[in-house]
Figure 1 (cartoon, rainbow, N blue to C red):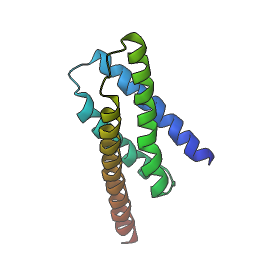
Figure 2 (figure 1 turned 90 degrees about the vertical axis):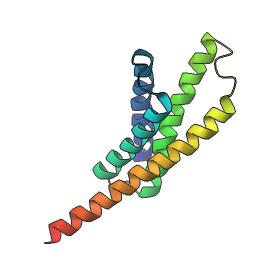
Figure 3 (figure 1 turned 180 degrees about the vertical axis):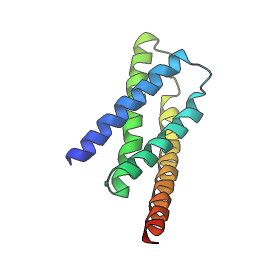
Figure 4 (figure 1 turned 60 degrees about the vertical axis):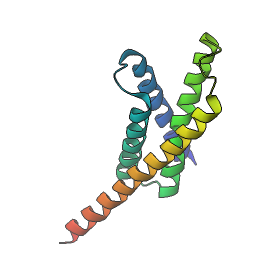
Length: 121
């Protein structure tokens, strides 16, 4: 359980930094970058830890969604009309994050299998 909480906190902090940088580098398209970032994080976590596939698939998108919800709360405090389609944003971003994490996880599994086959030779 401790490793899952650590993973959630690390992903939330990394995603928060990424979302904060979004303010200063507007050429990064938010939705595309979020999907790529989530997929890469899932790939990195899969390759560098011994956590199960389910844990990676659940906690990487959850960490990013936690950071996004914190960003939304800050945005709404500043301007109450900034996220008037919030339920749709959350649903769409959740689906995209889950698919990106699944893709990154798949690549991580494939890389580990290939590395295992190469090391057996």
